[in-house]
Structures are given as C-alpha cells and as structure tokens.
Image (tube, rainbow, N blue to C red; front, side):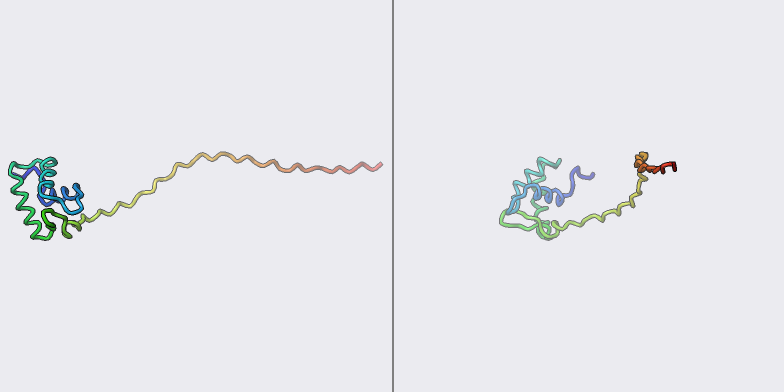
Amino acid sequence: AAPAHPKYEDMVKAAILALKDRNGSSVPAIAKYLGSNFKLPGNFKKILSTQLKNLVKSGKLLKVKASYKLGEALKKAPKKPKKKAAPKKKKPKAKKAKKPKAKKAAPKKTVVRQAAPV
C-alpha cells in the first residue's frame, strides 16, 4: 500500500524551508515539524535518520555540525515546464452609444440693407 505521506525528501525540504534556520535545521526540529504536519508511522524517526544520511550522500542535503541545510540539488529543484498560455481572445468592446455633439451656433450673418434711393 502506498504511504499516506509524500517522499521523505520532499518532507525534509519543506521542513528545512519552513524552519528557516540560518545554520541549518537540527534532526529534532525536523522530526518535530514532520510529526506535526504529516501523518507518519510510529517509527518515522528511525526512517528519517536513514533518509537524512542518504540525502547527504546524494548531495541533496549538506550536513553542518549536527544540522542539515539544503544542498544545491534541492535548491534547484527541477521546475515543471510551464504550459504556454493560450492566446487570449480579444473581447469586442461594447460600443458606447454616442451622444450627439452639441452643434456650435453658427455665427449670425448680419444683413446689411442698403438704404432705398430717395
């Protein structure tokens, strides 16, 4: 049966990132984080210690004194290729009803009447 938790590698990475310890996260701190955030079997601390050793061997973790930091392999996790965004269809803008422009009053023509001859 498949376990009800992610890979230990993923869980340890999440723990180290969440704890944000400058000098790396200790084994008890990682174990406490995993115990509170994931559903794990009763013997997970023993499994955790072997997994941490394996991750150090593979270069995914760095051991600094009694703590662990993320190695270069886990820092640069393989990024999933992003799907290209579908070209956006331009929505036809609703045409606003044009208000009739107020016509300028035409200048009044003054008719000059000539005086009738007397």
